[in-house]
Length: 200
Ligand SMILES: Cc1cc2nc3c(=O)[nH]c(=O)nc-3n(C[C@H](O)[C@H](O)[C@H](O)COP(=O)(O)O)c2cc1C
Image (cartoon, rainbow, N blue to C red; front, side, top):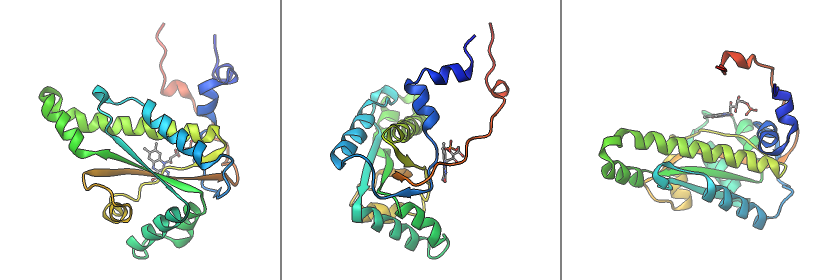
């Protein structure tokens, strides 16, 4: 019988999934070029599936001074309700990936397939989550640490104004990333049989 340990030793996607963690100690100097980074973000975005192939997800890769400005803006929008030190841990990274979905596209699909009308917003979210996870894992494979943040919806209007983005793009998540400053604590072992049941 294949144990969890044995599976992880096989490498490949399972090893990549194992290495993905929430990295809160991130720095500026990532080990790949901007060209390679953009290619990675493009490729992952292109390959992750969506319901009826509707491609509802949009990504904004924010780098350099724009990344710093983004986190300063997030701090300002909250008007002192978030800690400066916390925001600065994200600002300390190299960049941020903003994940959006196209509300108008989802509405068009709901009109086109009325028998699944209420499902399309859910499927769009699921596809967005798949994209976030794939991106998070692919970044880690390149020795880039990331975390997933949700300052939306408070920041939505300010972020769209800052980067001149369409009003019908709905912000779903922010993924600050950078060089890995330190590794997080190992995850506590869980009794996976409480969540995975095998019937044979
Ligand atoms: C849907 C989703 C939403 C999350 N939102 C946040 C968030 O807003 N802020 C944050 O710091 N971490 C957030 N996380 C990260 C989780 O807290 C983290 O993945 C979990 O504790 C497991 O730790 P790991 O990522 O190191 O494996 C989110 C994760 C998921 C999947």
